[in-house]
Amino acid sequence: RRTPEQCLELRIRGRALKASTDPAVLAEGKYLFEAVAHCQACHTAEHDYTTAAALSDLPPSGGHEWHMGPMGTLRSVNITSDVETGIGGMSDADLARVLKKAVRPNGEPAIMMVGVGPMADEDTVALMSYLRSLPPVKKVTPRSDISVMGKTLFPLVARAYLSPKPDWDLPPRVPEGEVSVERGAYLANGPAYCFACHSELNLSAELEVVEPRFSGCTVADPDPEDSSMEICAPNLTPHPTAGHITGWDEEAFVSRLGAGRGVKNSPMPWESYRLLTDADKRSLYRYLRTLEPADRVTGPPHRPGGWKPG
Image (cartoon, rainbow, N blue to C red; front, side):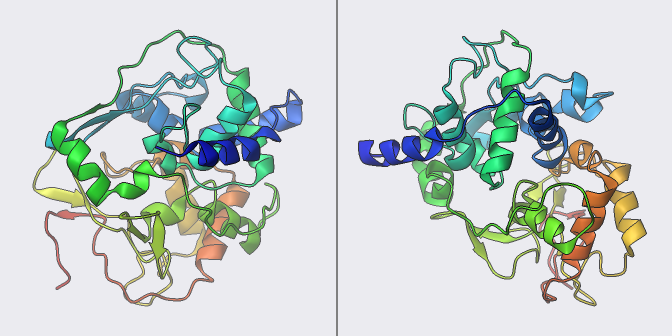
């Protein structure tokens, strides 16, 4: 829990950010919500997200579950504009604080909101504005259920999720539009949050990135439907042998992002990323090509459990 002084500081930081009703701002927010920041990947039931005919028809009324075995289950909440069960009763300052720092209005950690990428104030306002515009859905979502074991172990193995989000270095914001390395850098290290899955993270304190960025996952995730398999976000640097996409040209990269889910239980929000504009897909590719090659072998993204190089 934060001290009153820390809560006050975070509240003051968020107070200047006000939701807008400007149609252009709402359009930017919709694109962030559905594609870039992939909000529905966490704030809808997993089956609904992966099978929806159109994400625009999918209200973010919560229901996604993260099962942690004997440690318990984390659940996402309703973020529609409903006053009683959603975010309709939150002030703009409190909503900005949740998005920016993963801190609830009462000062408690919003655990999974640590998984929202950093973004410039302009994008935070756009996302807030679009969330305010969503039709209310009255739906009470069950609270997360963390066991006694989870309450003991979680602060030890993943303390970063119980702390405010760190102030990550964020490249300058480049608006959506033209293809550029700079736009790709902002997306990958910002609201698209690519670096968090495709880099090694220190979870014991703040979510510190273990350099080099984009050299592959921290630890592999078990495949929830096949205990013999695991999933690891691969090395995206242009290393000649360790880089997973080094041999891809730009067209292959754009085509793959647009193709959607390949591995059924991959944590990557393919359904959202496929909605990225062609320009943003190309910007991401061109940025990734500028990275320093990292000789870190991460193996096949979907591979037998306990996989080791060689």
